[in-house]
Length: 131
Image 1 (spheres, rainbow, N blue to C red):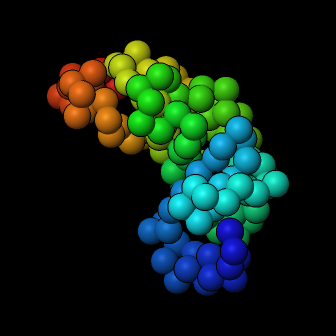
Image 2 (cartoon, one colour):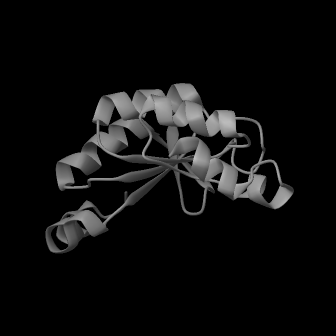
């Protein structure tokens, strides 16, 4: 976010290998390890990154990360439908139902952290459920 020239150069040199992570709180990008909020909407930031050549994102709703509540389906849906490139979702995923819903929204992948440690999601079952 702080150096668009670097992103453009990285995309030119490494194309598909570059993934930008969008950490969002209440729909707005947070930076510097989630400590600094910005006034830039996550969707607008994603659009600007696509213009620089980004072809894939990781989207984390930081209010839900590690909470085992549920993903921010509305924000993820908006992002998927606005930019129409692959999204890997993170934050709040705690059930096979969540994974299935994310797949239905068009999400390419999901990052599951705490739910694996707590046993809320079994990795083998999760892979079977979405394949």
